[in-house]
Image: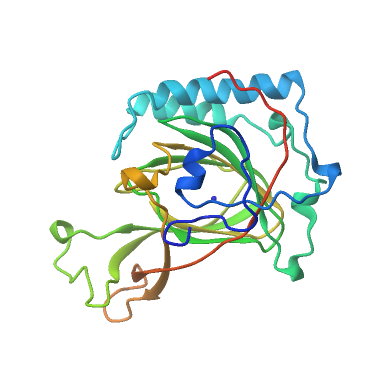
Length: 268
């Protein structure tokens, strides 16, 4: 689930020792949360998260910008993620991160599990009506599995000059993108996979109900390596677009997220 790339803003905090890549994205997380939300996972939960990490580490072992895992690896990771429930990763739908009043512009809660040079593993927890605006994943492959609730996902891919006779860039910097997905997903849905050039690399999330989305992405965001996360406004192409195209314009945006205190020991 960044201003000039910062996906999260608020009070500075480091979720884990390996959160340097988050700071590269200028990801700042507000950790001033009640003690009732402090999470100490069970052995079973830790084992499950370790298994997710182990499979993901294998899948993304050779990850560099533009990396696309082979189909057998995609099937292996999606097969395991498809079997997961919210309880498997130690979360519960009654937790405060899911129950904020939807009228109060609720914040998303960011739960960071693990980070390495080739991948990042986390969960985004959404109260009803919480939103992550349209943003990109440059040169990245991302696996997203909804573990709770229903989520409206709208996604796009860039239109390249070689694939269309249309003008693909405007003088103001906006780029032409083609709609990939505009649908509601829930916990019964299969894992969604986006790739560097297709599959909906730019997407936005709108929680129709309290939601949890587990993300595995690789390689992770890294400002120094050109993988900063950017936000976009969209404007539909009305003339001959058939609702399938939009102009996406990069915009400065700051998103505040809560951080979830936790005690988790992943063997890297």
